[in-house]
Amino acid sequence: MFDLKNRIALVTGGASGIGAAMAETFVQSGASVWIADRNEADGHATAARIGATFIALDVASEIACAQTAETVGALDILANVAGIGHVGSLLTTTAGDLDKLYAVNVRGVFNCCKAFTPAMLERKSGSVINMASIAGVIAVRERLAYTTTKFAVVGLTKALALDHSHTGVRFNCICPGRVETPFVLARLKEYPDPQAAYRDMASTQLNGRMAKPEEVATAALYLAADESAMVTGSTLMLDGGWSAGK
Image (tube, rainbow, N blue to C red):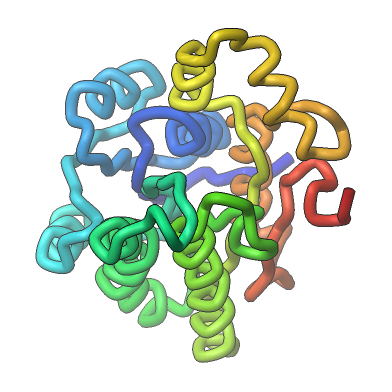
């Protein structure tokens, strides 16, 4: 239904998880896709598997993002998926923890937008998709630093959409709840009862299950395609009803 033929896309954090699913969905829809990630081994493997091109990138580096934009050239689609997490409240979170998450989750999005969107604005066309979280809309317990940065991503996305509302370039973010990524599944194996831990995590969502990475990728495909031309400055919730209340 959504055709991305003749489009060029770049997905940060595309080596695994949601980013990899997004990159693969874009390829399947006809786009030429760059995977940008710090994890070179998984990045090369994923790119080879899905028919994309890998480029090493640390989104926390403004210089690296600018250099990558020069190498890749103009984009039609920029998906800022790279991000890191942290568990802790005010009492257990250090300033260094907050700075580390801010550098990747917020500055990383800012750096990539700064590097890639000028060409979009010049061409008056493009879609920027930022990965936020349920934690960017409602607070999540014991996730102080993560919640802080994801609220910032939502605000950054809305500000970008407002500032460039008449340019033809759209800025949106996706806010998933719990997602069954390889990282999450690996962490669950560390619990004494992984199945009970899974049920506990999934129970925060009203439909009683976690999302699949492919479901998040399908939402990104909609935001990347022309069919969503009227959508900008939005926060697309994929949280199984979590934000509706318990």
